[in-house]
Image (cartoon, rainbow, N blue to C red; front, side, top):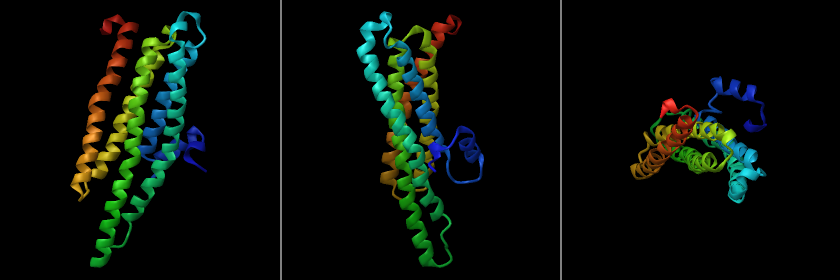
Length: 213
């Protein structure tokens, strides 16, 4: 059974266990899907309302994109586990002889690179979803604006969580060109989108409680 097909209780219990998967990457992808879904909910509560008729075409476009992002992020929950298992297995390879050590080192290097790719995709999708959350906060129903900000806050957490799953793998790579490229992409997304998510949250929080301004 796929991880995303399990109920919430089972998933959380497995996350809390000593099993290598699901782990931080899968949790980040799931949180990203949840944050994206909150944006979609704002759209669902806005579409069809006369007050927001001018914004409806764009709202529906954003809802459609959210639906795609939600599915993709949920798929990445399982894909992250599939990519991490080979790395976990590589660390358990024998290393008694020089040849075994060489094979093990090469396998860890290869699997570590592959393990970076899913968290990178998670980050990219969370960045897009944060942009959408900002638009939902701006154009969506005022009665649901808090949900847009909740989505942005959750997506910021997912973004940060996914980044750590990249940094932990690039840290030990011998291929420093690859590592530096991955780190640079990761840091750029963190720099731009943690600030963007925070701005969405702060603006909405200020609207709801002016004392926070």
